[in-house]
Length: 309
Image 1 (tube, rainbow, N blue to C red):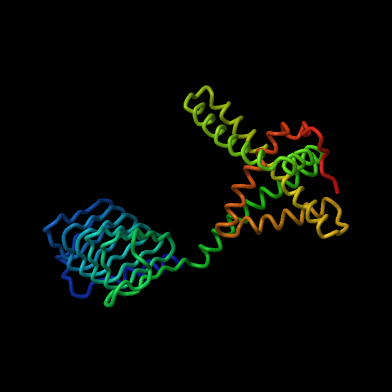
Image 2 (cartoon, rainbow, N blue to C red; image 1 turned 60 degrees about the vertical axis):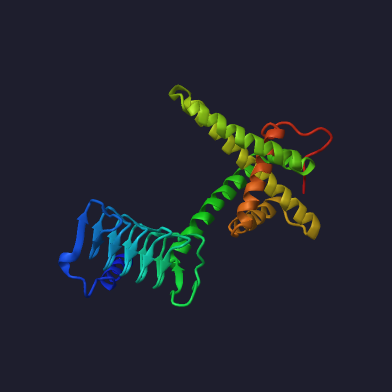
């Protein structure tokens, strides 16, 4: 409901006041192009594409589609549920307003008004989001709080699922998890390298086998095995962290609560921008490598016993 009202207000605000109705081009379920040298009054397109290489003396309005401007628009460009791409020769005399879409500016484009994007992902290839020179308006982007919360919620849900699965594996297979954890502690670099190699090789092999329909079950089996090994490895990583924390802090916390606490902390850390993703990438490789080194926790490394609290 809020999105519909916003879209309606956006299009209403963009309605032209001086362009005659006869000068407007209207298309439903189609596309319209203004070639170089041609001049039109305004453009209204629903469910299609707009390409402007010539001149539009009024506004460009688009609902559900894509607008590409590499010419001149004296008015504003308004898009609902679509994207706007500005070429190096684009000249926009008014504003650019986008709801539920993206804006892409290429170096050389000129916008006299403001660029406003509600939701979506703005893209730049050379232009900053602050005023570029006197006479050019502010470029600002706003992501609604509900969009930001949804993105964060998805990340938390995924990491919570992984943590819960790892916790379940630890409860049902404590010996195998301890063996993997010990291997990661004793051979961290080997685990990292072997895990990365296994992930790449497994993905390539699965993709190659998927080309042949009869071998699709093998592809699925490879995917399931890698996922199971990854979860088992993460259980080993979390157990190792829990043990090191308990030993360092010298507190008498039982293994299961310590594992659960570390799992919660790992969920939070994994959702930290940039650093969290890097930690998941490196940690995931180490986890998978530890599982492969110990053959899914069934073979302890020579000369080393499993970690214990």
